[in-house]
Structure formats: structure tokens, C-alpha cells
Length: 203
Image 1 (cartoon, rainbow, N blue to C red):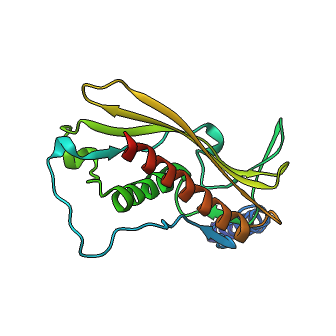
Image 2 (cartoon, rainbow, N blue to C red):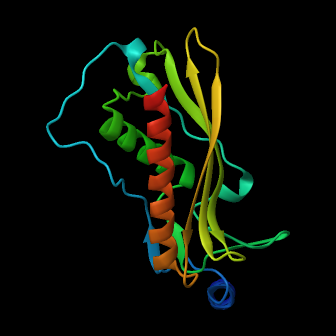
């Protein structure tokens, strides 16, 4: 009886080893780090030590932009042609594009306009000013060899009509690869943020 049990255990162990060997070819338990981790950095940033105060209702709340399905990922979309989309090889964003663009907008608006930027939680729902919108496109267009960013900004102010404006920025690429794509998209994001800041400051 003991021999039978031992033999049975050996068969189970062997089966596990075989299965593990078969899976190792198609499943990565740890996974290798991607070649490039892309992020966005603001050209205009708030100087350390500078403070800003004001009432919660006067602060600006920058909401996370809505995005189409192709941008609801950490990968960089590459538009091959009208009906075909791929993703840039060997690179991922450090966070989803909507979050990265939101953070860049907040930093740029605080630096360029001196705006008091708070979150919805920090204002306890008492803010009267909101910036929302949709990040329509933020990726690479292989047809024109450009990094492209399109943002439909929506300004909401209590007691005022809702305002909506489309912003677009493009940067040329020599080659579609992670480093160039990351640098070009960073420039695109900063151009968009700067244009939004100028629009809000003028109104």
C-alpha cells in the first residue's frame, strides 16, 4: 500500500513538472521589465517653497479626462492606417495616459496661471470651477510620422455657461521607437497644457 501511494505521488510530481515545463514557454510568472518606461514631465513647474491659498470654492479642480478604449491602457497606440491600430513595442507608460495628462495639466496651470489647484476630496465638493474633457487622441500616427495629441477641454464654472474647446498638438518623428515617441509625446502634452492654460487665463 505504501509503495502504491509513493508511486502515485511520483506520478503527480512528474505531471506537475511536465505541465510547468510546457507552460514556461508561453507564460511568464515574473516577466521581464519593458525596455522603456515612459512618463510625462512638465516644462513649467511650481517652484519649491511657493505657497498658494484661497477658498475651496475658488479653486480649480482638474478632473481625469475621459478616453476612448484605445487609450484606456498603459501602452502607446500607433495608428497604422484608417482601420488598423497597433501598440508601440517594448514600451509602456508609467500610468494610464489620462492620469499622466491630468497631472501635467495641474502642474502647468499652477505654474503658469498661479491657480490654486485642489482635488474634489480637498474641496469637499464645494468647488465652483472645474476643468474636465476628453483626451481624444494621444499616440503615434504612422501615416504622417507624428506624435499626436487631441484634447477636448470642458470648462465648468458655477453661474456661467459651460465652455468647450478642442486643442491639438503634433510633433514630427524620424523613427517610430520608444525614445523618440516618448520625447515627442511629452512635447505634445506640454503644448496642449500650455494652450489650455492660456485659454483659461484669457477667460
